[in-house]
Length: 331
Image 1: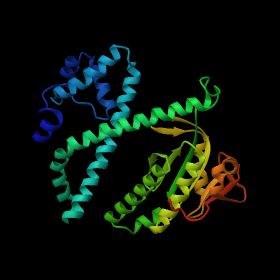
Image 2: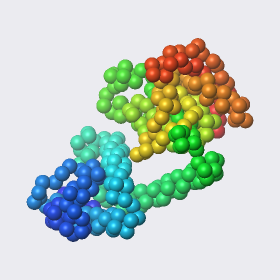
Image 3: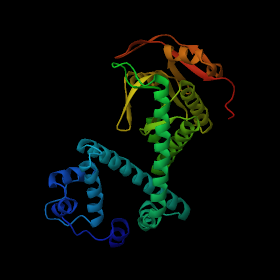
Image 4: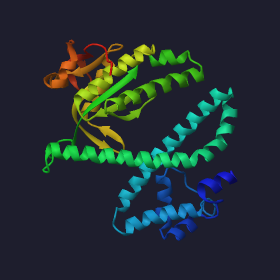
């Protein structure tokens, strides 16, 4: 671990939490909150745990708060988002490398992890460069979406009682996941989940959508327009059927709220409930969303099959409409 400390954190741990706070010029309680916001447990008083790298990171954030660039609350939220995202990212990267090493060198899981323990440190400069590049690209894309939203609604904005963002929200899940996964080996289960998530992310990106989150056997995504959302969902049904992994889902158009990397609003709940109603390899919409899609020029790409009304807890009567892509997707 000494090599890891040196290459990743600039040296061995030599500072207590009090010394970290003093070095950064920050109150000790705020320092502890900063550490928790990153997603780490409290460090006992007097334990040497921190390095000069930690001091520099905390000092830079404190300087932004002192300059009134961001509030203390906003700074904590930003750090919390970073901590959560980086925890998921490094886990994803390490597990990807473990799977790769295990398959290529025919190693068991423990042996593969021992190899990856050193290999990840050697890869860290490349991964940091890719992280910086991806962050800049994603920020550029988000600023473009904000600009388009403002252009669409005007500078006066939406109604005060309306949720701010108008989006297509889609929900896709694997049919009979519990039954299917019960008979799989650990490696088989990992392959199933990875194949589904990879295909979902590829198809969502292909048509201009964005994955909000994956939950094992399900993926939640958004798109800026309804045709894009419908293309994602219907294409993913086709792609997964070709892999003998049937899915089902729903796409709904409406307003939502985006916070902490997640989305909220009645349309999210509606998409989830419609997915529960969908048969295998079927994508459902509510009748209002289907009417909106059908009225657009891109609506000619799709066929609509109205299903009997259904009572949904918390939503009342819902009129599902099956949406299908005309012809075979050859794009």
